[in-house]
Image 1 (cartoon, rainbow, N blue to C red):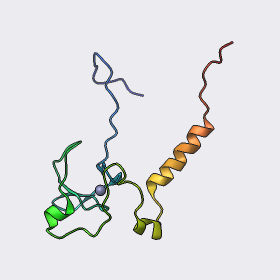
Image 2: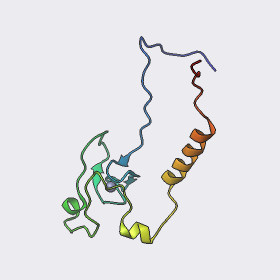
Image 3: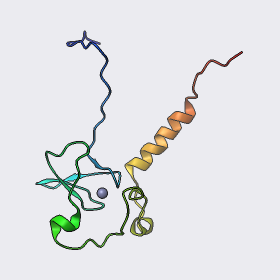
Image 4: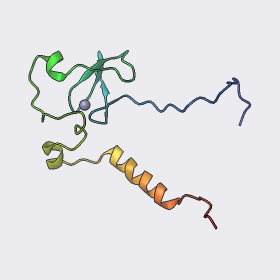
Length: 113
Ligand SMILES: [Zn+2]
């Protein structure tokens, strides 16, 4: 490990930033003009930042969306189409991996005696 190049008065927080649709919890795709959620069709401009509201598929496309109507609170749940056409998800895999790590590493709290 090399010596640090900068010094802060207080420790920064860790930022793990990945562009995803907050309602679907899936990674958005760059489509040339901006970002688009492959699941709900919402689009964002390329310079959109964390927490920026996108534009609904119907609004930018002018065509009604055929997708199932959801609220943001349950938008991440699988749709009927996804239940009928299951595909391996990296997030599911990640969840399994995390579960293994968590069960494999019990917390080492000192037991009160
Ligand atoms: Zn979405």
